[in-house]
Length: 121
Length: 422
Ligand SMILES: Cc1cc2nc3c(=O)[nH]c(=O)nc-3n(C[C@H](O)[C@H](O)[C@H](O)COP(=O)(O)OP(=O)(O)OC[C@H]3O[C@@H](n4cnc5c(N)ncnc54)[C@H](O)[C@@H]3O)c2cc1C
Ligand code: SF4
Image (tube, rainbow over all chains, first blue to last red; front, side, top):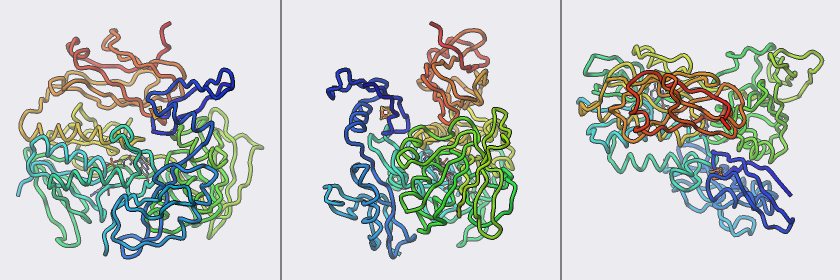
C-alpha cells in the first residue's frame, strides 16, 4: 500500500508518502519536515482525530461568546456529537485561558478548555 | 511627552514589534489600537494551528495573541484601546500621530519612530462586480467569522462560498460544525488560494465540494439572496457556455483576498510598491521615511501569523536602532522579482544592519512542481532553494546567510523559479 497525504499538524503542510510494504501495519513515512509528520500519517490511517475549536455562550463578558477547544484531538466520527454537547454549555465570566469548560467530553477522557481570558464586565 | 516608538495597531505584528523595540532599548513605547482589545484579527481566528514552530504547541488565534499580550504587559508597555489613528505626519526628527478616542477626543502624540502595523482588510463584493441585485445575505468571510465566533449569531443555513482563500475555507468548516450546509466553494483559478492543510481539514473532512475554475455569474434574490448561478471558466477565465448551474442558498460568503490597509501610509508620503500594495521596506522594515517602519499584513499579506511575528521582530529591532542612532541607511542591494515570482519583500537590504542572515519573503505567480527558486546577483548564482511544490497561496521564505551576500559588492538580487539542474 502507498498513500499520499498532507500533514495538517502545522501550516507547513508537508506532503507525506506512506508506504506499507507488506500491508502489515509497518508504515514507512517520508516527506515530513519534523517528527510530528509520521505520527500524524499513521494516526490518520488508523484512527483519524481532530481538535475541535468552537465557542460556548458566556455571560457577563465583553462579548457573548467564549472560544474553546478540545484539549486533545478527538475521533473524527465523534465531532458532531461533541458539538451537540458543547453547544449546551453556558458559562459566566471571569474565565481564564486554559480553564476547563467541560470535563471528560463524551466519556472520551478529553476536556474542553477555554482559549481566551475574559474579564467580568 | 515624546515617545521613542509608537506602534499603530495592536495585532500580532504590533505586539511583537513593541516587545522587541522595548527589549532592544527603546524606552518609551506605546501601542495604539482602535478596537476594544489587543490581538487584532487573531481574536476572531478561534481555530487551532498557530505557533507550532514558535511555541512548540498548537495554539488557537486568541491563545497565540495572549502569549504576546502577556509579554507586552510583563514589560510594562502601555497601550491605548478604542483609539483610532487618523493621520501620521513627518516633521523630520519627530513624527506626529493624530488620534481620536472617546475619552480625549482628538489629540496628537509625538514620537521619534513609528511602526505601522495596521494589518489588512478584506476585498468586498463591490470590488468584483457580480451581476444581479445586492440582496442581504452576502458577506465577506471575515465578517461572518466575527459574527459567529465573537458576537454569536449565524447569518444563514444554506451557504455558498466564492473564493478559496483561507478564511473562506475555515468558515466552511465552522458553519458546517454549527449546523449549516455548505453547498460549494467556487474558485475562479484552476488552483486553490488557500493552504492545502485547510482544503484537507475544512473541505475534505466534511465532503464540501471545491469547484476549481468556477465562478458565480449571477446573484438571485431581491431582498434576501435566494441562490447563485455558477459556471465553469476556461484557461482565459471566460465563462464556458452551457456549464451554468443554479445553487440555492441563503448566504454567500466572499473570500476573494485581502488588501493591506495603507491609507495612513500613503497620506504620510511613504513610497509604496504596487506589487504588494504595501510600502517599500528594507531588511529591518524601514520605509522611505526615516524613522517610519512597517511590518505584518500592512506590508504584504501573510498567510501565517508565525511569519508576521517573525517580521515584526525585525521592525522592532530597526526602530530601536533608529532611536539609538545606529541604523545604517546605505542600501547595498535591491531585490527584483524575476520569472515566476510576483513580489519579493524586503525590496532593499542595507548589509550593515544585517545580523546573521536575511529572510526574503516572496510569492510565485502560478503552481510549479519540483522546481528551485534561485537568487542571482548579476549572473552569479548566490543561493538555491528546492521546492517540491510552489503555490501562489503559500509564501516562500528564502533565508540567505550574511556571509554569502557579503561576497558581492552591491546591486540587484534577482529571484527566479527555474528547473532543478540534474
Ligand atoms: C478576516 C481575516 C481572517 C484571517 N484569518 C487568519 C487565520 O485564520 N490564520 C492566519 O494565520 N492568518 C489569518 N489572517 C491573516 C492575519 O491577518 C495575520 O495572520 C495576522 O493577524 C496579521 O497580523 P497584523 O498584526 O499584521 O494585522 P491584524 O491582526 O489585522 O492587526 C492590525 C491591527 O491594527 C488595528 N488598526 C488598523 N488600523 C488602525 C488605525 N487607523 N488606528 C488604530 N488601530 C488600527 C486593527 O484594529 C488591528 O487590531 C486573517 C486575516 C483576516 C483579515
Ligand atoms: S511534518 Fe512537521 S513541519 Fe511538516 S506539516 Fe507536519 S508538523 Fe508541520
